[in-house]
Length: 311
Image (cartoon, rainbow, N blue to C red; front, top):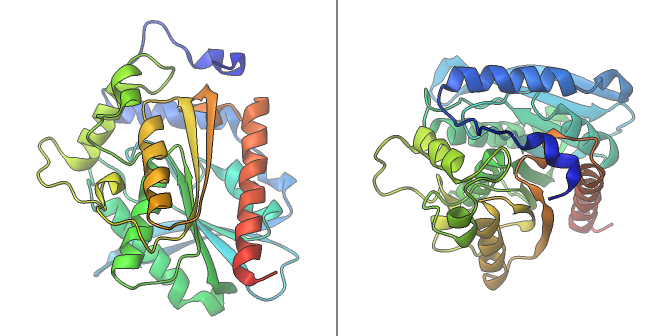
């Protein structure tokens, strides 16, 4: 393991038990490592949109946009991580700000409903509803509807992949690219990495088991591929993809398998496996590898948007 992540190793290991305690700990860690957004020359707007069929249930979203943008811009619908049970609009604001500033796109982050209080499909419904809102109001949002990408980290990457599947199957808004970072894709946890990695820093098999139980419920039956995209039988017709896998992550092999299946289905895929990092590497943004990977993601997004726009 890269020594930069030694602080993630804790003895004795703390398990996932009380969801409120976990949320408070995550919030405290974010406060300590929060980035000053005033350093970024961005317009940042918070707004709410109504959920499906319920005007009283609102979906918060945060919009990041460069101040010097003229006309419509590409957009990244970004879905935060947090095991489906924690995270908010501010969880990954450094990444969102960097994407908006340096990939020269609008970034819309979604605060979807969290498990276990709101299990599947609540989070996915919120994310897909936001995609439809972006599509329907693209002119008012100054967004190019031909240049919509979805992305996220961990549970957020699951939701991004599921949104792409839904958009394909419903013949919904056109998505040109998906950015899947350390994705949680398979609730079965039968891969070699899911079986072997029982004590990796921060997030190991036991945490993955709790994550899926809270998201799917105690005794899920006939798990939907929109809940666990690895279960989808057909991956053809999905958008071009970038997939990042961490070498010391129980979710590593399901990300690798998904990339391989996408390729076999004729989808263009760029895959990056980093052997020396754990699942939670992005929680230490000052690490050299974290900085390098964020720069790579920015470059990948810029390239994807340029390719789709014919530039």
